[in-house]
Length: 125
Image 1 (cartoon, helix red, strand yellow):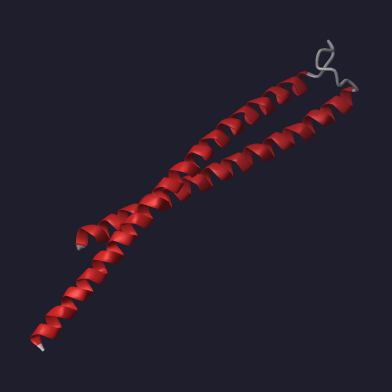
Image 2 (cartoon, rainbow, N blue to C red):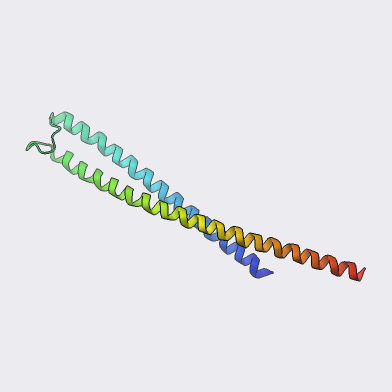
C-alpha cells in the first residue's frame, strides 16, 4: 500500500525535523553559554582593573555593569531555551513513537501482501 509507505516517509520526515530543531536548540544553548563565559572574563578583568568588585559602589565600572546586564540576559535566554528543549524532546519522543507505529503497520501490510502473493502463486502453480 502506497499510503502506508507515504505515511512512514512523512513520519520519518517529522522525526528528522524534530531532531534538527533539537540540535539547533543545543547549539544556541552552547553559544549563549560561551558568550556568557566570555562576559564573565571581561567583567572580572574590568573589576580587577578598577579594583572595585562591589556593584553598588559609586565608582563601579560602567562597562562591567553593562556586561553583567548582557550576561544576565543571556542566562535568562538560555534558561528559556532549556525549557524549549525539554518541550522539543517530548515532541520528538511522540514523533518517534508515531514513526514506530507507522513502520509496524507498513511491515504488517508488507507481510500480508507477501502472504497473499504466495497463496496466489500456489493456486496458479
